[in-house]
Length: 124
Image (tube, rainbow, N blue to C red; front, side, top):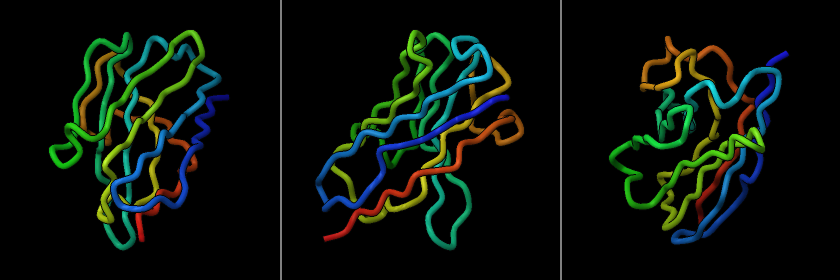
């Protein structure tokens, strides 16, 4: 059974940092691209970052470039999202998602499993 379990969310002040983690099980983690996707209250899904299976290629939403870093540890079956200089507009539920390919894109059709999400709230 494929499982994706996120953690690391919370309440942080503007300008602060958080690191999200997603522990994967039930599939060969190192063979698939992974993404972080967020959903703000009342809004649709927004792709934040994508990383390929080997970790050597990444892509980011323009609004998070230079502030967020996606990474993975294939030995630990874990995906990370390091977030810094957080802004109130980053407030959302953050999900990790598994691609069906080794190189991911921002197309929801290419993702077959999702975690339960972790809440990130940026507020003073």
